Length: 217
Image 1 (cartoon, rainbow, N blue to C red):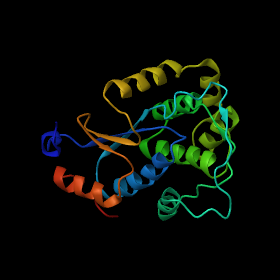
Image 2 (spheres, rainbow, N blue to C red):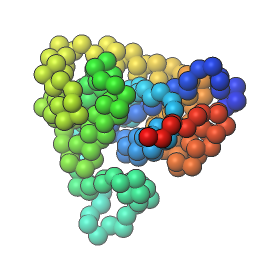
Image 3 (tube, helix red, strand yellow):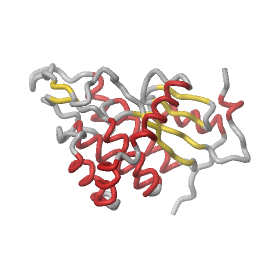
């Protein structure tokens, strides 16, 4: 197994690729953790698609909420709250996320890393907090516009299926390299940190790999 020290290369800036899906609550939490880390440490950030639940049909799936207002908060909900995330209860639909993953691929080509991160955050919020349908192009386009991307260009790209193949290939690649749970954070295409680990875990990884902190100001 590759160790952190094996993966570290002092001549190459660290790259972290986040493998995630927009219906994965732990991926939403992981985004907030990695954003905090990215604001402090100097590494590049990228994203890769994954299907959390391949059994979801193309038309999505209705669901019956498993909690009520009186149900005690789960560990997941408590962890989300600690990261400033609201996982609002009562959601009755789970989308098939291929279209949203296509939008993510489009954003990777159109925006800088910060904009892409904000786009991901917006889609997570749309699903988990606002209970919007990520299969609706209007939702994907609106969130893109909110983070400064060209919504009209995205709408055309989705209508033409320009990124359908890229998403399929990206998902296949994630499976091929052995990703079985998300979020997975791939360091320099060699080493993986699996799960929405606490921020302190990632700080230890940064220290062991010798990643420099960003200059203040």
